[in-house]
Amino acid sequence: MTTTVSPPPERAPGRPRRRRRTTDRGLNRAFRWVAVGAGVLILAVLAAVAVFLLQQAWPALTAGSDELAASVPRYPDDTSLLEYVGPLVFGTLLAAALALALATPVAMGIALFISHYAPRRLAQVLGYLVDLLAAVPSVIYGLWGIFVLGPAALPVWEWLGSWLGWFPLFAGPVSPTSRVLATVAVVLAVMILPIITAVAREVFLQTPKLHEEAALALGATRWEMVRTAVLPFGRSGVISAAMLGLGRALGETMAVLMILSPGFLYSFKILDSAQQQTIAAYIALDFPEASGLAVNTLIATGLVLFVITLAVNMGARAIVARRKEFSGAN
Image (tube, helix red, strand yellow):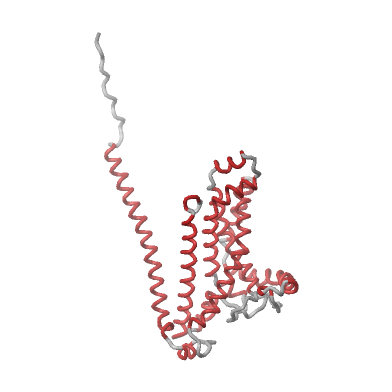
């Protein structure tokens, strides 16, 4: 009985395997170096901005109060630079905090409706419309705030001042022009709404289907499923989205400059004019006419805003890192 030995299968025509592996390794190595280079470039640009701000702000940081008062308009005598910038920091943080408080709940509701409630076609249309809000220039928002939102919101501000005037935020008198921080906060909330909504929507869509199906299988309603499965999973992602919106609100310039009647006070009165001012709007308002030490003072205030924004983002990353094991933000 004879046994036949079949010949080895012929290798299909094409590139050799060894050459293909070598090519893949080369591409992987090139991609790795490109990614590392991009990360280093971002750090280098950030460091260059910080060095520039510190270098240009140094004359103002080391100057005396008499020199600053002689060079900077509206600079009070016997006042340090930190005391002068303090009201600007207060107004910036107050406006951004109010905008974030108004925008975050609305953005979360829109994101949940698009991701878990709306039909697919309606969700696509709403997603496009929300993303379109981010493309509107800030000047348009400023004009809308002056000519549309301000007059329309004046009865609301008067009602808040009449019935809730005992609360510091709504203490009177109410400005008849509506060029107040409350109007600015609403405009900023609309401006940061698409950023928070877009990020929160993508995070909610990443919720594992097994978690949602398990909650529904246990008899949960759709809202109970969202509350027990979707929101816990996307909590860190929503925080990241809110911090991105907060960064936009902190640095917004034109809309605030066009709407707000500026003031240099530590005041919680958001319905009265000439109370607060933000750093970005202050720089844009005074920079065209500044010269000499006044320019260095404006750059010093920009350095303060840079430090605030950097601290906010670092704090957000620290919060997200605590829940990175169970999060849609990473």
